[in-house]
Length: 107
Image (spheres, rainbow, N blue to C red):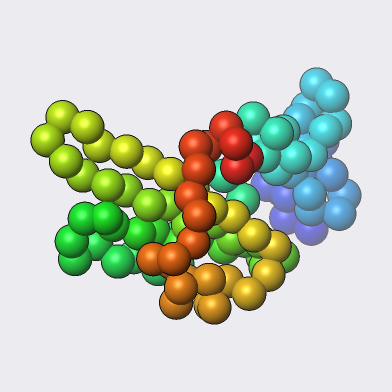
């Protein structure tokens, strides 16, 4: 084990299994971040920004997904979401016909 790895374990930045933790509570850092930001676990995978509305698709490692629909108009841009737990590719293909809603209703 390297000195830097040992220091991180001693000072509580990661546990012995290599999982990042909060030094004061030993809670997993990823869990804390995800609880504060429900989108933190997602990575952007698709973009369709040729014309309004624009669509942005994101997935996580477990197959959960969401699509952000951005409608741009003078002084009134809107952002709506749709999310699911499987079949991202099918939903991305059919993104124009999905039902979108406000962030607080989806997440």
